[in-house]
Every structure is written in C-alpha cells, then in structure tokens.
Amino acid sequence: MPPSGDDLAAARAAVEASNLDDAAKATILGALGASDKASSSPEKAGRGDGGQGRRAIQSDGPLMDDGSPVHIGGTSFLERTKSPEWIKARQDVYDSIKARRDVELEAKTPVDITITMPDGTVLDADKKTGAKFQSWRTSPYDVAASISQGLADSSVVARVTYADYCQDYDAAEDGVGGGDILMGEEGDEAGDDGGEAGRAKPILWDLKRALVGNVSRLELLKFTDDDEAKTVFWHSSAHMLGEALEHLYGSRLTIGPPLAGGFYYDSYMGEAGSDGALKEEDYKPVEQEVSKIIKSKQKFERLVVTKEEALELFEGNPFKEQIIKTKVPEGSRTSVYRCGDLIDLCRGPHVVHTGKVKAFAATSHSATNWLGDTDNDSLQRMYGVSFPDKKMLKVWKENQEKVSF
Ligand SMILES: [Zn+2]
Image (cartoon, rainbow, N blue to C red):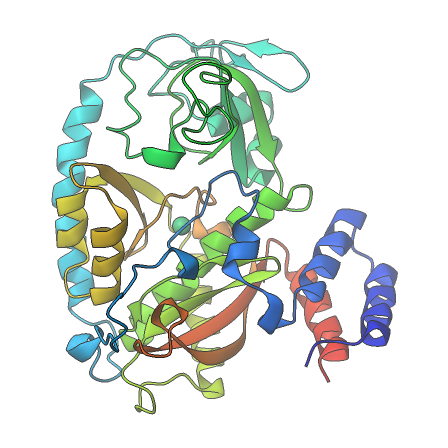
C-alpha cells in the first residue's frame, strides 16, 4: 500500500532530524517517496537520463503479433544452481572478443586535446606530471585527479559535451549508433539535415573511459548532487544484484533498470510456481553475495561487440538473445559491460568499480512476466536500494519502516 501523507511527513521529519548533510537527506527523501513499487516504472526512471543506462525496457519489447503465448525460457533454468558452468564459458568468449577489440584500439593515434571545465578553465595537461591530455588515453577520471584526487574519487560519472571528435573516432565502430549518435539526435528536434544538426549534446561517460575529442564542457557528477549520477549509481547496483543472482542461483537475467529510488532485476528462475522462485529468505544470501562483490572492487569494463559476438556471448540465455535479435540492427555494434564474472548487455555508463557502493539492501520481490505480458514466461523480480554511505542506508531503512507499516 502506498504510504499516506502523514507517514511521509513523519518520515521526512525524522530524516531532517538526522545528522546527514542536506544533499544526503534530499536523496533519502527522494528514495522514500519512490517506495511505492506499483507506481515506479523503468520508463519513468529512464526519462531525462541522458541516454545512459537504457537496457531494454518493457515497452521496447518485440511484438508477438500472433497473440499466442510465448514461452522462451524453457530449459535455460532447471533448478537453482550455484556458479553454473555457463558463467565461465561466457567469460572465455568475452576474452576472445576483447583481444580483437584491443587490436583495433592499438591502431588509434592519440592526439592532444583540451578540456573546458564548467567554470571556463581550459586544461590541456596534468599539472603534476606535465603529461598532455590526449584522445584515446585521457579519461575524465585523469582530468579530475589532475585537479584533486578527492574530486576524482567522489565523482560517480562524467557528463561530457564534445566540441569535436578526433579523426579516427567512429561512433558506429564504438557501438554508439542509432538514437545514441553523439552530435544531435537524428529524427529528434533537428528533423532535417540543417538546423540543429551538429549541435553538441551532453552525454554521460564512464569516468575511466578514454575521451575521444576536444571537450567543451566536462562535468563531474556526484551522487548527492545530481539525479543522473543517482541513476548511474542505482543502475550499476542492479548489475551487482544480477551478478549475485547468477552466482547463487544461476538465474537467467533479463532486464534490470534503475528506478526513481533504487532498482530491480528480473530473471527467469523456471516456470510459475517452480521451486526456483524467489523468497524472502533469499534476501540475506543476496545481500551477503553483494557484500563480497563490493569488497572485491570489481571494475566496470566496457567492451564493444558486433551483433554476432553478442549472440555468441549470451548463447543459452533466450531473453538476452531475443533482445539482441530484435534491438541490435544487422551489421551494427553494441556494447556490453563486465564487472567480476558478470557480463551484461548495456549501454552504460557505470560507477568506476563495485566498491563505490558502500551499502546495499534487497528490499522486496515479486513475480512478473517477460515484457510485462502475462502470456509470456513468468519472471522473478528482486528490488534493491543502495547508497555510497552506510549511514544513508540506515536512515533510509528506519524511515522505510515508518512509511510502509
Ligand atoms: Zn549497465
């Protein structure tokens, strides 16, 4: 049941009275307000997110126009299995693709670039070492660290507006195609060839992803100051939840979007009513597994893959295969991200590593269906919330109890 106005008011007063700073309070209040799961949709969370973190969402799904029940999960999940063998097989495929991409990257020629900060300061080298900032080499993290290590480490993600791209950058080769093209959005407000075409558009960029041109504005976003940073943080946490579900149960992951206050991951764990289904007793083991993932500070690593490579990577997961077949145009590339031994289809960006998430809680679970259609496979949904500070989770939990009794 949604919290009543009185409950929310009481929770708000309690959060206000806590000793967190104002930005942290605002974040927790935002997450509490979004605790009504029924009204939280991935579509809502996806708006205004700068194009980041959009894994397939339910409304994007393939149309099954004959109206017949579509059960594709089949035998891809038979029973709960710890560390299933396909995790290792997927890793081997990943490694061979990565070797091919590394050869492509070695062929790129770094050129000097300039970075303009929001206050107008133009940077072209690391002040401490004198090393020039260069395309294919320098990341937003490097630029931040050249200003202060604290700034680099407290940022979640970068928002980059390119002035131009270096000559050997090709968005299609980089797996950034279609609606994601970086300079103006095709079929969007530009409409025709003239007008706004070529207008620089800010995009979210992994802190450790090398820059590929001169930057007219580099913003370094913090969790407590910026909604897009929160979305990236919760989106990254969804991958960690997915990784735990794979490790513990061999769940077949489907989609796992961020919400306005947290995230979930849907996975196939056998047909409706099967022994595989999630239970409340699973929360603790999931939280413990995520704790291990946090402690091992797994880097989020981006890898561009062709459609064929993507299908090879996710062979055996009928849901990911369907997303790839219906969403990735023939002959084009897309991206996957790895953290630990989880490899997931995703546009990113993410936090630098899993250790950035300091507190994680599994908050609820439910049954749902693939693409939201009750004719499709039954899926198990687990919701979670996470914060960059243990204290924030503690305050969130105390007030969650108040608003949901
Ligand atoms: Zn992702």
